[in-house]
Length: 179
Image 1 (tube, rainbow, N blue to C red):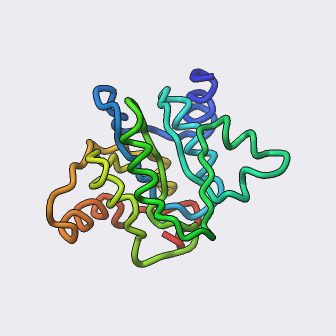
Image 2: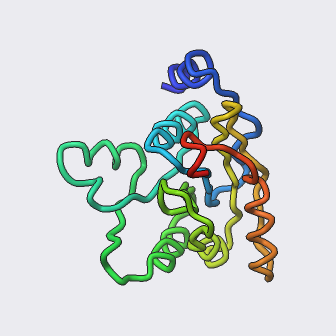
C-alpha cells in the first residue's frame, strides 16, 4: 500500500514532500493546515500511507455512523461527540498518557472555512501530554507538503502560537480564499 500511495501522491498527482515525521519520538501531535476542502482528508491518508506513519485523527461522531463509519475507524479515526460538554483536551491527554506510542493528527482551524484565529486545543493537548507539535503544511499552490521539525512548547503561549503559525504564512490551500 505504501508504494501505491507514493505513486499516486508523487507520480500521478505531482506532489513533493519536504522533511519527514520523526521516527525517534513515540508520541507527538501533528497539525495540518490550511484545511480548506474535503480533499485534505484524502491527502492526509495518502501522506500517512506513503510515509508509513501510524497516526490517528479525530472527527465528528456522525462520520463514524452509517455504511462508511468502518472506513474512518480503519484509517485511524477516533469519533468525537461535539455536542457533549466533556473536556476533549483532557480526554486526549489521557489517551497520550495511557499509551506507549500515540500520534494524533488534526487541523488547528477546526473547520474547512476561513478562520482568523485557530482553535487552541492542539496546543493545550501538547502542553498537557508533554509532547511536541509537528507542523505539516499542505501547499496546493506549489504541490508541496512540508513536514517541519518537532516544535516543543514553552511557557509563553502567545510567542509559541506566533512561531507555530509562521510556517503557514502565505500558504494556499485547495480553496485559496479559505486559506
